[in-house]
Length: 187
Image (cartoon, rainbow, N blue to C red):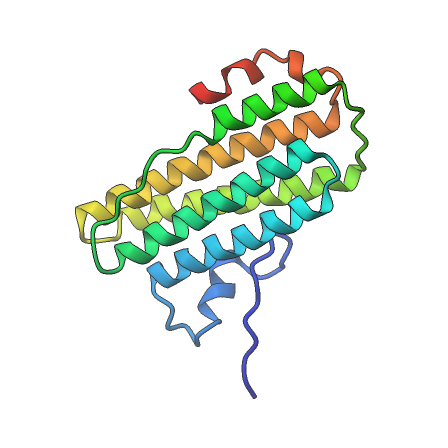
């Protein structure tokens, strides 16, 4: 019987690593694993974007999906060569979108289930960050270590952005007044 690939979902009961190691009978290497994590993250963010009615949040979630694609490509290249991965402007871009949402005066309706979905995405980012930090100490090539550390930093930014989305969804009328928001790109 052929084994079905199981997408990572933050609410799965199996451990993060164990789920992936089962995909190919335990033969998946760290690069394949990391690429799968990024691919699953992309799919998850695209699903979330499709489920929100707010155009600004759709844009931010699509940006997060696109970031996961960049990570995937960098890891894929890292298997055979030293990759170049440009820095991200996702926090400053997201800040501009949040300002546009505020200036539009659009009412924002949400359900409490959205908060849990975003918290699960945060969990996914935190686990990815931890994985990259751990693997940065295990790889032999310095450029691989540097990329894993950079990816860990990117995942930290995604976590922070999701924290801001959760805050926005929880209290859209007052969230933009939060001083933390105005320093997003410094994070």
